[in-house]
Length: 122
Image (cartoon, rainbow, N blue to C red; front, side, top):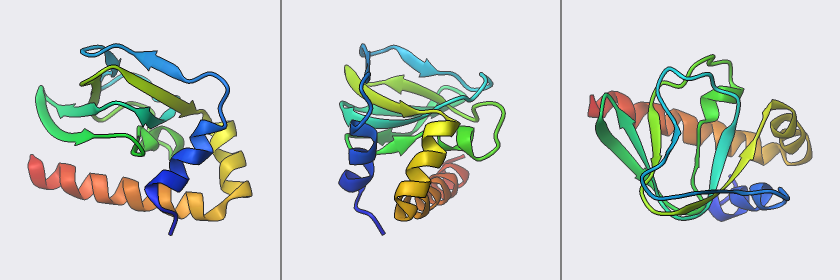
């Protein structure tokens, strides 16, 4: 399994990371899901119905369901601090999986673990 830092290195190859100011919604529950994100710097809160269920820091990935068939976001992601985020659309995700198969396993493990934590926090 790739270490989280190695997973984010795949995101660091992206030329145009996104800067999101603290308190800004990255996406909201119910919105269309087109990208997954990797946190290069900062912290992101994941919220369900206004309740913070997880705080993610640098080297974490989120929004994975967008690339695994979920049409809409199941939770809201808000920048807790100013964040530097890399993002992958489905085409870039498939390329990363092809180039680094362990990346796919790490993403699936992260997704599974997050779903378990979300289910237990509700």
